[in-house]
Image 1: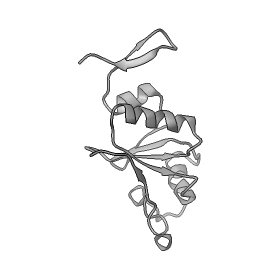
Image 2: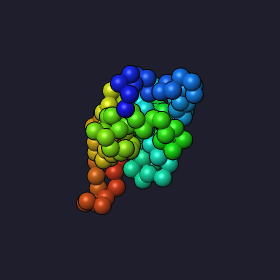
Image 3: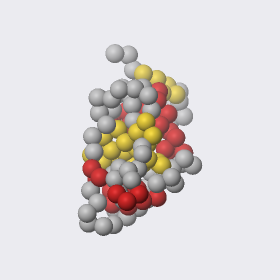
Image 4: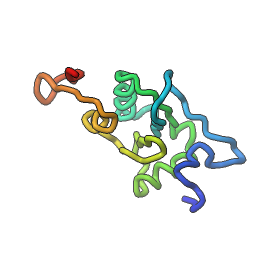
Length: 125
């Protein structure tokens, strides 16, 4: 990866090609949540479902649509092109997180019912 690529430059890797356009979901955000994903990735779909369920606004950059973004993902993950790679306010917070890890990152309390294969639900406030 070139030394001049910085995490904050994630949307402008190749100035000649123009900025990478992240896909936004609907809503106003308190924090800037960015997911590097692949459309075929089950873990990516699970993370997106979680964010949608809790109405957490986010942006996505699909590595299939923007292969130049893979340099950033690989730099964040010690050379591995692992997705989803999640940044919050420009800080790398998780790669391939579990649902419990996502809940912790976003301060959401959930209860599990039905044992290991049970369903998650919002914990009473």
